[in-house]
Amino acid sequence: MDRTLVICKPDAVERKLVGEIVSRLERKGLRIVAMELRQIDEATAGRHYEEHQGKAFYGDLVAFITRSPAVLMVVEGPEDTYKVVRTLMGVTNPRDAAPGTIRGDLAIELTENLVHGSDSPESAKREIDIFFPQFVTL
Image (cartoon, rainbow, N blue to C red):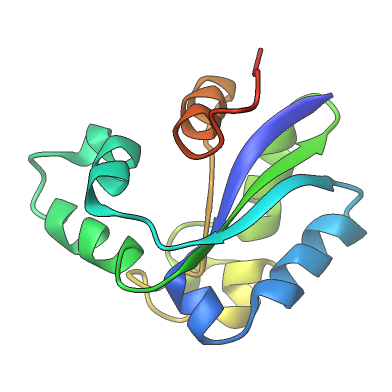
């Protein structure tokens, strides 16, 4: 089985959409193997968003992900689970996201797009190691 990281960002928690997001993942046939409601601290956010350090929007990313609790999940499925999750999420900008996707149905703003999903097997491993270090990932 393949694993990836999914984060229901603070806006999803604040808007009470976590159940809807989890339901969509599960209806697709994916399995939640770890889940935690957590306030992400600045140091952890910095590790998560390290590829964006130095970019103009970096401070806003960190401020957003740390503003209130998020729900972090390790999601398991068949090969290329990250691709399945990213298809369910829709494109990053909700205004361009297709109807039927999480962002297409539930979000409007680019800066408040509800959900994060790892974008590659390498990112999935790195991100799971950051948020769920107790998991041994391949």
